[in-house]
Length: 550
Image: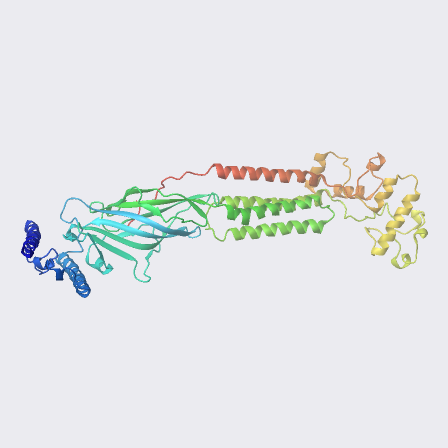
């Protein structure tokens, strides 16, 4: 019975060896060499098998020793394969050297992150895995291993494409902790060369619509020395530009990333080039919070002066200057991160209009002060209508009853005097004037009240166009006439029974309260509609590479 089993196993073992021998002979290999070209007998590859009961269980230590020996054999075999492949290899020649047709390099990109995108330098950066595939049949081999992952030192001994970025500025390969490169060769000669790159490239920007703008940042790369007759670049498949899930940008939304193959003309000839365009839409939230809303509030704050009485000169001027200086500060801060372009951006137009409204508010009060304010807010004393106040030392010991009306010709007059020199004297002067006019029964009560608080807005006796003409001309005679009308209570308005309002509001202020807010609202409506409805569509632009000379 043991003999039968022995012959059966021997027969099966012999059949296995015969089959392997026939396979080697079919491929033209010697029987004493394996596929990795090492002097090892084919029969030694097959572990001896004995059908005895004692040989059914293999010792663990023997199994480990055999596995270690097999690993050493495989590593030695790989080294021998590479040495044989590179024995007559010329790294300076293209894989298709001596054949008809160019070498094809296929490319894909996996983008890990993008940013920052700088408007000041007009550039952007991104971190990506840059992969290139090509076939070099000189590196093909036969064997059970489908692909070999090799050290990057192997790159110095084989041919690889001289890819460079046309619009690159400062790109580099990551080297921590080792150079982040990968080289893999399949048995058919297909080569994968992958790198982790940080690419900083130029991005020509059109900032006329900033910050409601759209930008298209290209990445253009190709061969530096080989023309399209020798080397052609192609995108690997229909999904050659990918992004890591969850990737976001701080100031932009990535709308799309179209890519294409193009051919450019240089002085040396035609070159195959790949281009991918990153279409970006800017976020406007930051600028709304930091620029637009503060500007609108400052402009609205400047309109408060329209409700401040024109007699408060220092208050209105101080408010106007404060708003102007604040607008200047915001305008300067908003330009720090922008290039000095030759045109005005959308943000510049808004800041300019807001600054104009603050200046116009200040100029409006200047017009009110010059054209309609004819008094100082105090009681002017005209030499023809008002008696001079007594000396200060004599007034302090008198009471109100001592100010009796008397003949004006019997008292001395102080010529070219508007107010009393001392505050107390001015107060008694006002009280005396009130008593004098109160005892005069021919004057109406409203005229008596006007002696204490004079108006600076008088009734218009002349046509408005003529008054405007006089104001623009700066006629001194007309201005003195207005001052006398404001200072006296016996003007034409009181004679006709019309009461002049004390501290009346200027007609210019009344008009400004309506015109300024209405025009500013209209400007904002037109501004936002114009920039949001006229956004340009993304199109392939002229990369201007045809004029590049190397």
